[in-house]
Length: 495
Image (cartoon, rainbow, N blue to C red; front, side):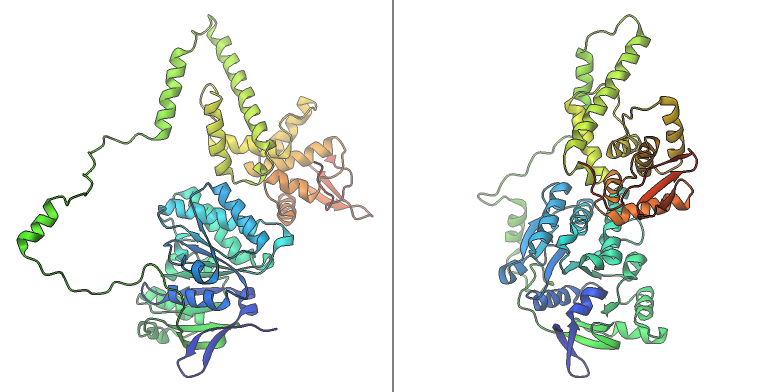
């Protein structure tokens, strides 16, 4: 059955409609300057398809929350932690509920982190829940910028990765990205290039007109037409709507946004003296202006000050400073290993982003009063990779195991734990770890990502994958001369 979603009318006559099934398979990019009618177009598309497909809207301005009144969307306010948003996103896919992620009120950095966590939750859900879903991202240039923007580097990389997954790999998981941006030049090219359907609205900058013309297969001299488009008019192209560039006019909508454009209203007529009174005197019942506060102190500064106070109250050091330092380092390492063990004992900790786990780790260190300076992020990544792989306390010959750690040191930090997991099995001549075990050690639920990771290490000569006559996998480590016993790649990981 073909489902047509009416979005308006063609300027040369007739209706303009999307083939919804084709749209879910080929994705959509909308571009237009502020005031060109992008939000109106997205609202029309959402309203017309609400009864046919599950929807999720990433809404940075809180403009689409009114869909809840008419079409039953659940509004998710981004007020919890990133882990909370990931869990909510997984439940959204399991129960097939249409939602609007309201990012209004957050700073740009918070919006980017929240959107990345929510999109990752949608993406990482189990295969049994890969139902078709329309994922609409308004102001996509915030979450997939072509260059560094207002968000910090870690948040920007996480958001860009989530948007890339949505547009590049989301189709197999049932996720159809619909992204809208004010300027194509500000949007990451690898994200924009994955869309096969386009709706280009009014724009004035030469670079944006040129990119729009290239995407639509038009000649550069035809790009001037984008300046003449009126509000709500777009040039459409794509397999789900039309095979040649076609001007369309977006139809009416049932719901309205909370923003809206500015409307001229006459100024109130009042004498100048009355206007002065309104400005310089407080009205009855008006709250007094707050007193000027001193410089703000961050939570990190307060915790550091408390730590210094505890050190001042600590008992005096022993007579032998070297021995005291050694004992302190041993106690610190034991405490860190204990905290990492507690974190990895939680069921979902293996699949959380490193940035979230690092913040949790720092808080636990302060609660347990771990002496000395805490681990930095690179050191934490290294220990976390070993903990995920279960090789932190390997009971093997120290000299033999040292060779494996030296080989693993040539790999990126997040891959060393996986290599050592394979090395541990090879040294014990145990069956080859399954894809699920390798994925868990890498911090993901995706077995295909585990296979790509093995292929990456094989291309660089760290290991060789082979199969026996029964089709079971064996992994050889040429630098060490070790080899695992045959094991099924699809076997369930041991609990």
